[in-house]
Length: 211
Image 1 (cartoon, rainbow, N blue to C red):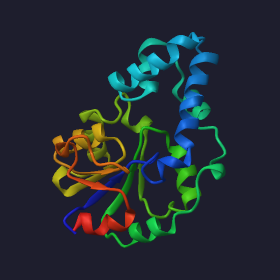
Image 2: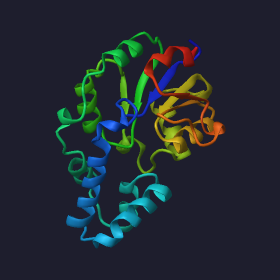
Image 3: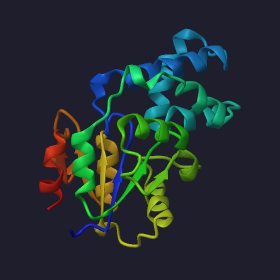
């Protein structure tokens, strides 16, 4: 295999978006803004959208304008019973185990949430490293600095020897611009073919795409 390291996003990438977990996380983000920061209801949705677009994550946006404890925020928004939404993924596990390259989680969530999700999906033995929002601080995906941090933390010096899988086209676009082979994991293709090196909507395609 030409790729030495494979970086995988977590939420809505390693599990199908239709499972409903991310909408619940999004709702808890709104609850945190309302209950903990006393942000008026009518401002929450516009602020959440602006933060996502301008800062990469709502957390980074809130940190720029409010006093927010990142650990408290992340614990609050991820406090959900994962068994209601996620099920083991034996097909994905088999596909990952067949790949000889290093496999790393690269997420804008925190390590605690990542480990809980991986355990629920029975994928915890498939990944050798988790690079989370804290490790990327003060940056986050899709910032180029976050991708450069991921390379540094994995001792990878050449992005051309790395592939990145993510459900967000803005992240696959940023990764491709940095030299990664980037794969959009989504039911729909990227809005612009230049935004990803490849498109994957079925994990059975994984080995073929990387080959």
